Image (tube, rainbow, N blue to C red; front, side, top):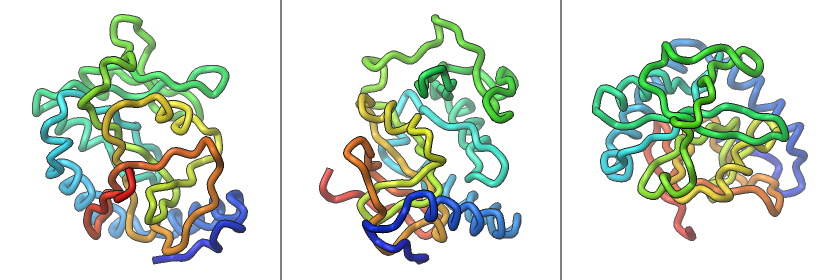
Length: 199
C-alpha cells in the first residue's frame, strides 16, 4: 500500500500525490478493480438489506458507480445521488435512471432538484451511502477533493457509510485529519472489505 507521511503530512500534498497516481493507472487496471469493488459492494449484507442506496455519480477516472446504480435500480432498490448547492452543502435526490441526470459542477452529472424526491435525514436509517475518496487509511478516514461536501453530509447521516477505494488508494499510515472529518464504517476495495473496528 502506498504510504502517506502520517499525521504531519499536508493534505494538499497527499491529494496531489494520489491524483497523479490515479491518473497514471491504466484503464484496464481501473476497470478490473472497479468490477471487483462493485461485486464486493453488492455482496455486503448491509447493501443487500438496504432499500435505499445513496451513491456518488462517478466522473473521469473515479471508481465507476454507474454500474452499481444501474444494478441497484434493476434490483428494485431506491437510488439517490448528490446535488452540490451553494455554501458547500450537498443534498441527495432519488432518481429512476441515470438518463435523468444533467451536467452540474465541473461537468459532473447531477439530479435536477425536486422537493418530492429529496432524501431527508429520517429516510436514511437502514440505507447505505457510497463514499468517494482519493485515499483512505485503515481507520476509515479519507482525503477527498478538499471541499468538505461529504464530511458535512455524513456528520448527520444515519445509515452505513461504505468507502470505495482501489487498493492503491489505501494508505498504510494514518492520514491527517481534522475535528470535522468523518470515517466510513466499511472500506470496500478490490482486495476485499475491511470493517472499521472502533465504530
